[in-house]
Amino acid sequence: MGAVQFVNILDFVIVMPLGPDFAAALGISTSHIGVIGGSYTASAAVAGVVGSLFLDRFDRRAALGVAMLGLMLGTAAGGLATGLWSLLGARLLAGAFGGPATSIALAMIADTVPLERRGKAMGAVMGAFAAASVLGVPAGLELARLVSWRAPFFAVAALSLLVTSGVLLRLPPMVGHRARAAEQSSKPRVPLLDSLTLRSLAGTALTALGVFAIVPNLSTYVQHNLGYPREHLGILYMVGGVASFIATRLVGTLVDRYGATLLVSIGTTIFAGTCLWGFVWTGAPVPVLPFFVLFMLSGSVRNVPLQTLASRVPRQEQRARFMSAQSATQHMASAAGASLSSLFLTAAPDGRLIDMNRLALAAAGVALLVPWVARSVERRVRARERSAAEAAASAPATPARAAAN
Image (cartoon, rainbow, N blue to C red; front, side, top):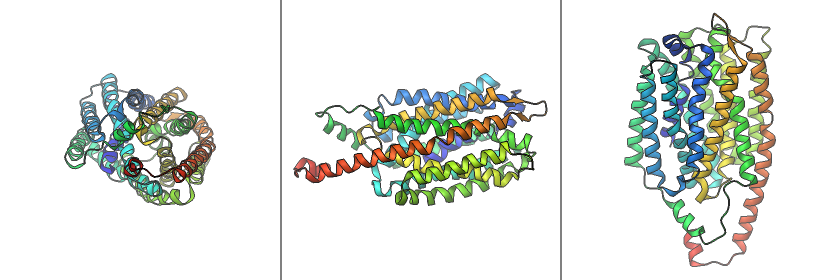
């Protein structure tokens, strides 16, 4: 699952650092890079809505294999783009399969890892984001510099094919959720979207909206606004990725011990403070490396507890559909953030982005709402889990119940 996440995340994140490269080659304005990033997320959002209707009906391994094959085709098509519209089309195709791939992978983790170790497991798997930053992004940027901006797309597509082969050949079938659904079929149907689910999805939306107002423009900002040299851009992602990798492993363990709300609050404080420091209070020159590392670190500190908490919201027989709905929410909010950034920003003739300070203030304001939502979700989840444990303790033992356990 870590390999699946690595390829999926790399396919998404490599596009934004390459933005100034393909913008120059294809004659695309730098202010439109956010739209290209948003096309992937918009497509993934639609796919997530559709997937939430049926993904739990299939063997998770087979569904993941199909999603990864589609991601490979969309990524390869990006390397063949000849202009803005063909690149948008390729990213739409990649997003249509990349979003469900993430949902299924996270559902597989939640299905197989006990609750008391789930934070640690989510931290390990979500370390793929940091690994993509440490290994994939610097390698992709160097490959683009030495060969062409198209080369990273083809390289990621080849890696996707390799990982897909591993998924289909090495993973066992995963159909336990279908047995659970059959067991529950005689009971009253529980709706997928209840008040707890909606609160969890609201936290996902707020997080993604704030982050992706900034992320698609970050590479352009550090190069054109802060004067960071293009040839050293890979160093930023490498150092930031190492810090994030260490953080995800540590934060995952801390979530199991202290709960999600505390870690979400710490991550939000880092994110909002970094936005104010790097984009708003720019009277003194901003040291790019510490600024960039803190920005990436804030994502790791928030995302692991949020995802661990979200894995506790759905029942097992609804998990892939919930994760798909969560993916849809995340990508819709990401697309909205990326698209709104293009409305806030304009590009100067030398490539500098104008009004990043206003955009960063809005992103920080949205982020400050996330800890309050996380606290509400965690309290409700814990109350439901206590009630379920008390009901299980008082219920008489039966052969069917023992077999289910």
